[in-house]
Amino acid sequence: MDSDQINKINSKYKGAILDSHDFRGDQTITVQKNVLIELFKFLRDDPELDFKFLMDLTAVDYLNRKDNRFEVVYHFYSLKHNHRLRVKVPVSEDDCTIDSVSSLWKTANWYEREVWDLYGIKFNGHPDMRRILLYEEFKGHPLRKDYPINKRQPLIGPLN
Image (cartoon, rainbow, N blue to C red; front, side, top):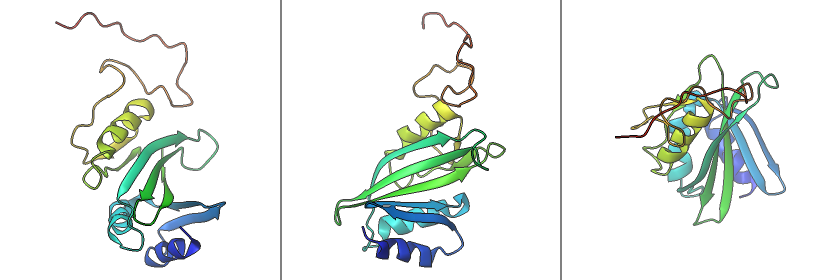
């Protein structure tokens, strides 16, 4: 992917793109979360971009290092054009929610559940927002930087 595609995204979503860069072929844009679904439909459906493959979805906790504590990070790949794109979306601790993209890419279902489980970021409109790696009685979200590493969790007995 060359800078023409980043320019195309920037021109269509002027004002919603907070940052973009191309470093050694690594394309990254940072966007406001209020345009997420519309932007992602554009990335998937535009023939010049054609990002039909959501490779990964994760989160980063920037506790006390950025204005917004979290970023949800999406990695896309275009099989047709053999190019990649990383999209970062800042999420504040006060409003720790973001729209689900599981209606656009089915693989997002598991990724979003993992981010909810480990970081506590809730995905609006997700069809099954429950823990995927930890048990339901687990308290907190262990990949948050302020999670107490010595915290004792409730014990659960055998399932009947």
